[in-house]
Image 1 (tube, rainbow, N blue to C red):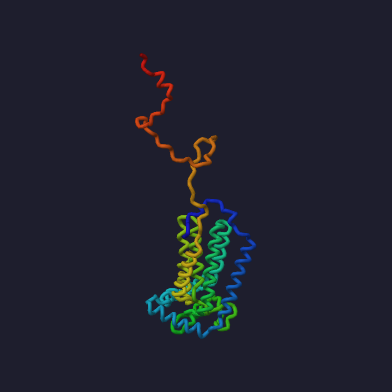
Image 2 (image 1 turned 120 degrees about the horizontal axis):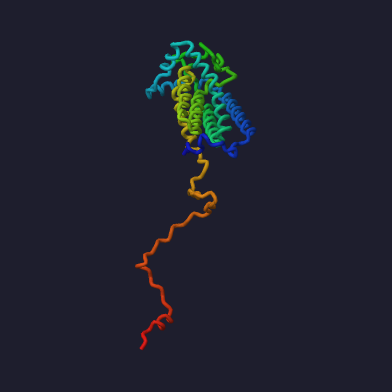
Length: 293
């Protein structure tokens, strides 16, 4: 279970919870390199990726999910809007996540460790799915009838020929880490801060969802699957309380009075004098009080 109240916003960060910076940089860079290499290793299954794309498209229609084309048609009404969507997709994903981790590392070390673990978990799970279930995005699926907005309007991070793209694996649509990381950024900032405006961070994953679907880079199902992975990660890697709940010891009112070191025990119940057991009298008292003859 996550504890949102584990560290108030106005409290100084606990430096003892902050991992060494060099180790964290090497860890994050190493995870990123492994992820990129793993995606490239899964880029050769072209026929399987297109076959899976057809199955995903048919599944979405059979369960009556809204068509991705409905979102794209809204963006295509204005060329500036579609260019902004392409730019958002190409430039916000990595910088936003890195800035999120950097801020947590400096201001909320405990939240940083938790967020980094969750991000690593869902990224590793996504890499496994990319290897097991290669999937062509809807912009490459002829049956979808969608526009590859990146290639047509720009900018794009992908090559014109997906099968020979040496910079990115275009057949790794399932699940969408664009959406998964955006949700983690929003959740992490909402949990780690106390501002009344912190819920506005939910606009980041919402806007990301509209962008990835509207640019035809992902299916609705890609975001549903990564949301399920996040739910499992949250359950398996909870954010613990920073301080154990214990008995409260009240401090004395006077400044010069020492603080109690032991909790006082329950007071002894008062016994009424009417029911008190009479004390035994010594024998000499009876002798001195006897009747004189």
